[in-house]
Image (tube, rainbow, N blue to C red; front, side):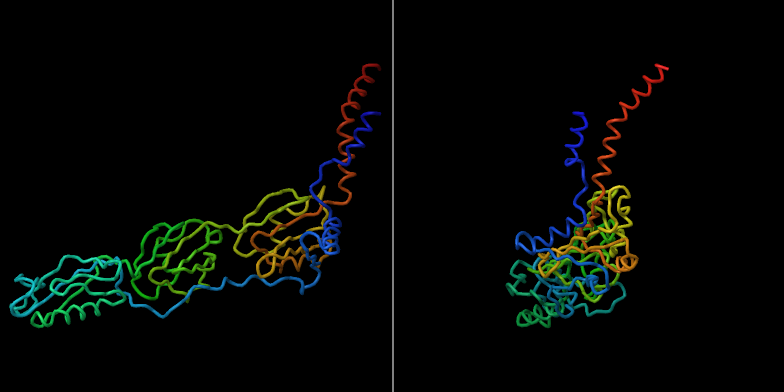
Length: 369
């Protein structure tokens, strides 16, 4: 008798996987009526109008500009400068180094200046001329600038400038790529997907990766699978961009009376609620109520409005609506506890406790006979 009383008194503490469907609905209604706690919106998914639209691709928020020259010069670039002079040379008497077979006036002399790095102020130093600001100029602009500066000191100087090391017309690529580092933009038409490809490609599943792009003080984050699929093909990389591929898988949680209470990754970059239910194994046959399946989500401009969507899987139309309902990152899929779950657990517990007694009694009776 004391054992039985202990069992009955313990029924209120029997394990439960969470609230039932009616408890979820009543708690949401109570919060609205009393004005306490988060104001939860409860929506019955029983018609197409309730199904929210799928998320559109992330809007590109970085400032854009027209195509930039691929030979623009700026701080950090290293230039090689060759000066060709006729008559008495200003920079020395070294004969011009020409290709074999080329025909040039032997009176023309060439002098190659030491490699010059553009300083932080965008300046280079030329003998007899001094400092010249070349930031933002193209290679052709710098050649003309040096030629004009030498014209009063040399007879018809001709200048040839090459970039030995390119810093300005490059981007930095980091993170989950095969070859991270500095990448020189050979044209002004490289898209974001081109840059990833030129870096050897990405490592991992693109649906689980995010491309973060920093341009000056601005930053944008876009799903890599969308980038590689061509959704942002018109968005070009610009000199100075910093691209980082980060692992940020899309996840949703499964809780309540299910066979698997855990976090799941998206099987592809777009999933539906029905796919999520199937992936989680569906409601547990012993403890869950198929009429009480809920999706918990934060909505609104700042993601501050909690919304609970109710799916009654005992109604056929719900299956079709769940196939059209797009899952989102950080959604929570909850399987409500069955109303009859507690009595069932009580019976199972009593059976387990009394099983040894029944076994002993049976054995004793067999020996008595």
